[in-house]
Image 1 (cartoon, helix red, strand yellow):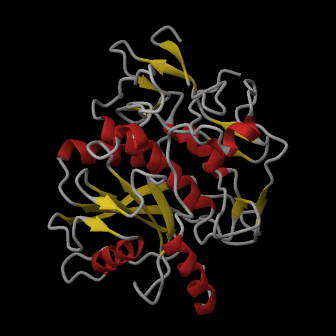
Image 2 (cartoon, one colour):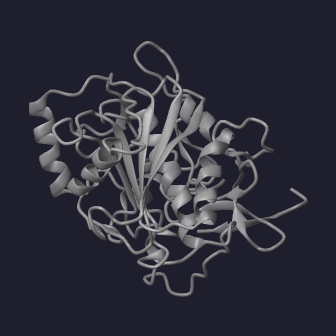
Length: 345
């Protein structure tokens, strides 16, 4: 701890009828979404209270396995870059994904963070894969579906990427995950309100395949105080100062935690019928939702927990291959609380 200071801050496609019902709810409600900033008087705060030893622990959390598949085979992440992206922005994100399986990185590491995700199993007892690799990438610089996307048009963007005449993304229904990343001048339905990212699966009626996917937006220009917290802070918390982002780009550094959040939930609940709390699969509370806004020991409610400061003042909680990142913790169902590689107890 001598090199940094601790900071305290706040399977087969489902039946067509089921898909139709789920799709109806999906496009009416922001059912699978996430925002990194603390909510006032929210469910998380009411359930987690002021627990400081067991981050987010609660006897009210009833995470259950609903017999659906989890990603036990090697996971390959295919990226669609929608809009204009610089080389440096892409490198930060690529290196985060590559860090998930790199066990040579110093502790606390991104691969150590993924070990909690690996604890989740399917009905055969097989664990989520430890191998997460970067797959193929597709650039959509010309914004084929415009600068404003709906949840439905997100799936059409994915369809365009996997059916392109030149260099289409490979179809990998079993171990493939598809990330649609939108640039800082692109708006997606509900973005900057309650949504910074969401995941679901594509409908075979649209894409031709059932593929787990996630969308994450760059909030750097549109709403950093909402989706890049704690590198920017929301207006409703007067006097709270933002922390310095570890890679010098608050929009991209804010995206990293959302990407981690969605990857963890895609691996443990790819078809929305595996690991989640609650009785309604349309409104599941998943393994990362349970730890919203928790980045270190003591986190819970609106308190982020203890993080680390580098010599230049940047705030982070884990190491990647060549970079430092701030990534939200995830729920550990074995001990029934949120855990992360930078835990102090």
